[in-house]
Length: 80
Image (cartoon, rainbow, N blue to C red; front, side, top):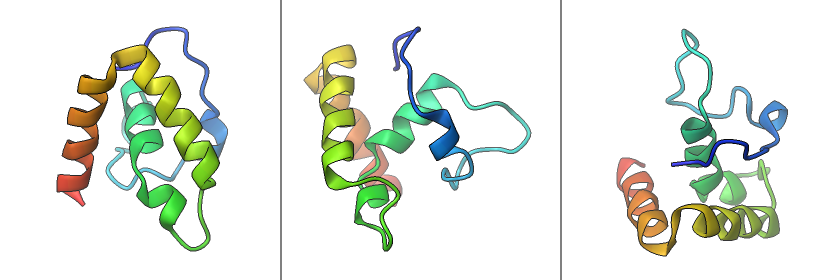
């Protein structure tokens, strides 16, 4: 999903993905799934602000397109 060369703040996301394996390195797709998950801006305390979550969403939509973004977001919401 994510475009090569995309820079994300990996350090702030390490350990935040409950479905990420400790046996393998995070991929850009893994990070993208975390950034797309609204639970991280709705948790108490929030991991990211709502503004940061929206900004990341806008960026991802620009990279993968709105239809792919919405399909991936639905997959994330169905899984939680």
